[in-house]
Amino acid sequence: MLRELAPEWASSAPGQLQAKQLPSLHTVVWIDGPADAPELETAGLMPFSALLAQGDQHDPRVAEVGTTLKATDPINIQFTSGTTGFPKGATLTHRNILNNGFFIGECMKLTPADRLCIPVPLYHCFGMVLGNLACFTHGATVVYPNDGFDPLTVLQTVQAEKCTGLHGVPTMFIAELDHSRFKEFDLSTLRTGIMAGSPCPIEVMKRVVSDMHLSDITIAYGMTETSPVSCQSSTDTPLDRRVSTVGVVQPHLEVKIVHPDTGTVVPPGESGELCTRGYSVMHGYWDDEARTREAIDAEGWMHTGDLATMDAEGYVNIVGRIKDMVIRGGENIYPREIEEFLYRHPAVQDVQVVGVPDAKYGEELCAWIVLKPGQALTESAVRDFCQGRIAHYKVPRHIRFVEGFPMTVTGKIQKFKIRDAMKEQLGLAEQTTA
Image (cartoon, rainbow, N blue to C red; front, side, top):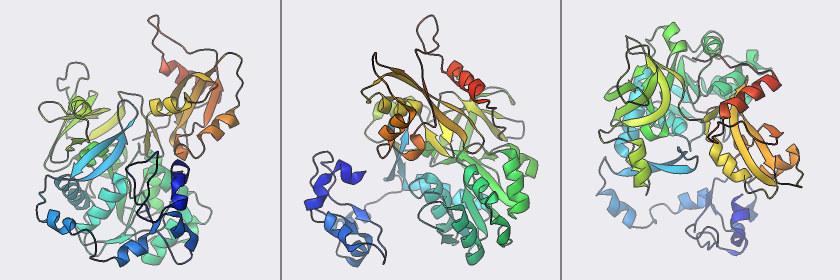
């Protein structure tokens, strides 16, 4: 995908890229290995081994800047889709992610004796904070099973490395539990880990505890903009609460459930928008003050857009989403981003994307497409158009060609009717989740 965007790589030396479509990008580093083809280096890409070999010969300004750093300085720009559906740079500070990683590890009761298997992506807060920083702040061992998720590799790694912890989104745990060779592996060293990223099916949690020996597994809830965890269960949380809630608010953070329209705090048990305040709230969206003010109010509360309830004991349960975000296998997908992409197809006049229930991923994308007059298009042609240009998990699984969309009398499209129609067509039922 990068080579397609920057064909100039073919004639560029590593570190000297000058691409018309990517004018600010000059250096691309790839993670190489002993079996990799040497011709990649000649394509303008710098091997990671070459970068490491430079040692301390980097720009001397790095050390100079290091002496001026403060805990409240931004350290990471984590891109996430926002209310518009377009990626926004959630700017996180040292204080944000380091403290969050520490308290996540505390909930898991991590020690230097633990060995945590991390099959979730490192470009995601799950791998970066719930994985790496939780371990680094407790002296625990980090174990990476592969450079991409594979259930068999995870099972093999847990056994070979005698891992005591395992992270994953529900679909990962389902893939491991349902693997044909699952019973071959000794997973008895496992005790803890985190299931997060999307609503956790109660039955899956029960199987993880009973069949994978993860008696101390915890559930975490949050968003990239809050570093990411706001609520988490602990190893001491009763099992029934661990499988049916996202635990309680993390130390040194505040959570409130407010009426989406009035902003007033709702009574225990009633649903409302979950808001978070404290050290974990992001520095802001990079170079976007307007959207930052939309997300973080004047009193410092981060408005998550998630609907939740809190009981009298402080346990939080996520019950829905104010906006139409789709969570597919732990990946947050905003339909408008997919709609805007599909609008680029010359045969597409209009398109609406919704999430529909799916037994494996929790939700799958469905696109309803209105074609321009005289145009013809097939489902496979739409998927071919998406291939290699958007992430694979953003390619709609269900595609329907329609004459129009259900609308209100004022002309607003009723996405819930599209979703209901697809559920009926496909014979789908809502997935029971915690």
